[in-house]
Structures are given as structure tokens and as C-alpha cells.
Amino acid sequence: MPKKTDIPLHYLSDDSVMGIAVHKIERTDDAIAMDLGVHRDNHGNFFFQEKGYSCLMVDFREVRLHGCGVFCILPGQVHYLTDTFDATGWFLATDMTALDEWQRAVVEEYAQNGMPVCITEQQSETLSKSLSLLSDISKSSEDHKQIILQNMLKVCLSVFACLFESEIRKNPSGNLRPAIITSEFRKLLAGQYKTVKSPAAYAAAMNISPSYLNEAVKETTGQSVSHWIQNEVIMESKRLLYYTNLSVKEISFSLGYEDHTYFSRLFRKVTGKSPGQFRDEYRE
Image (cartoon, rainbow, N blue to C red; front, top):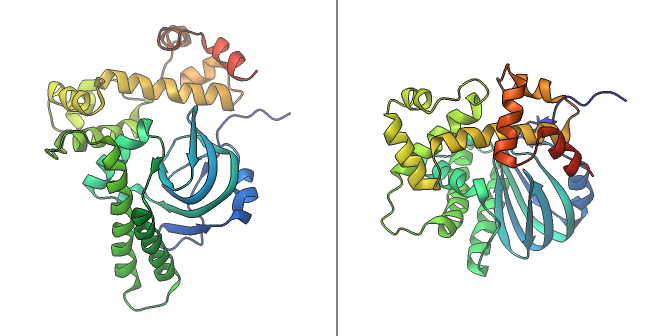
């Protein structure tokens, strides 16, 4: 049997329009969705379920959506659909660069531990009309299609962001500066955690002091910069332990640790299990 050495990475399909894929979900799509299997994407996924039931696994979290609600998955998060029944709605995939600073800050803060957000009938109607119009524009041949499509995409993303923000905003002051800093840090972290593990290095890349970066991240997330660097490494190691057959030594090297014994000690310290124990227990 061939050795499984990586987790499938999906890209936006060739038939996407200007880096946007918007798709109406019908009950007949259930089998297609189940066939996708375990994977991750290089783009953001935004889901709007009008009715029915769906269950996904997202980075070892079970996510259940009953009835009308919204949910999103960030690039790099490993996920797969485990169950669905009578589900209808919309699916929007787009490069994260399409989000403005506010949208990105809200979405990334929400998606780290976010669960589906139940929405009202009025909110559902607004989102349904917006996504339907986006879909119509993407299929049209109108003049200035690109400009119209980009602006309609901003509308749809803003609706999603507002719904997510309603779940995570407790402070009515609306000060998003710490969230924007945290979002930029996480963007850097997602691309560099295998080679850069120093909080000071991330702060330098953002032209702010390490203490200010740590203060902003802690205010937004409740955890330090060091915690999130370590969390990114451990989450990726869990993905590789569970979904591939790479050895612990190979995983250690792929994550930037030349000393695999140090990596194993770090993994045990964070999870309470050795890498081998984690693999054995989760694969049972």
C-alpha cells in the first residue's frame, strides 16, 4: 500500500470566476460533498444552510448545523463532511485577499473556535438574495462584470462578517485595532510557523514591539503569542499524525525541528500524550 505522506490540498476549480465560486446547495449534492473526503483548501469557505442538517469535522472539532445558519472554514483547516440530511443552502469559496481588514479580523477571530451561527428569517432572506445575485452576476456577460462582481462579493462577505461578529463582540465600543493586529499576526503565522517560532520575529515583521503584539493578541484571544505559535505547530502535527503515515521524525523535520526528541517532549507537554500515543488512540 502506498505511503500517505500529505493531506490533499484543494484549490478553486478552473471554472471559478475571478477567484470566486458560488454554488447553490441542493439535496442531490449530498453524495458529492461526502465524496470530497478529508482535505484542506487554499481559500476560505463560507456556508449558508437554509434548512436541514449537516455535520463536519474541522481540525478535530465536530461542527453540527441544525436548520438555518452560517459557518466558515479558513484556508489550511483540515475538514470533511461526516453526515448530512435534507440540507439546502449556499456555498461561497473565495481567496482571503478578497476580504477587507475588518472582514478578515472578524472572520479569523470567529473561525478559530467558532461554531455555526443560527440566524433569523430576515437575515436568511438577505443572505439568500445577496448570494443569488452574486451567482447571477458570475454567470452573466455584462459590461464591467469584474467591477460589479467584486462589489457584490464585498456585500456577501460583509453580511457573513456581521453575522459572525454578532457572536463574538461583547464590547460595544467597536475597537477592532487589536483584532486587526491579531489577524495580521495569524496571517504571518499560517505561512511561517514551520520556520519562525519567535514572538519577537513576528513583531519585527509587523513593525511593532513584541509587548504590543502580545497585548493585542491576548486582548483579542485570551492567549499569548507564544501560545498561538505553539498551537499552530501542534495542530499541524496532529493533522499529519492522524491523516498521514509519516514517521514522528519526518513530521518533526517538516515542522522545523531538527531534534525529534525535543519535538516529542513538546507534543507530550501540550497534549499529555506522546505522538505515538495520539496516533494510536485517534486511529482506533
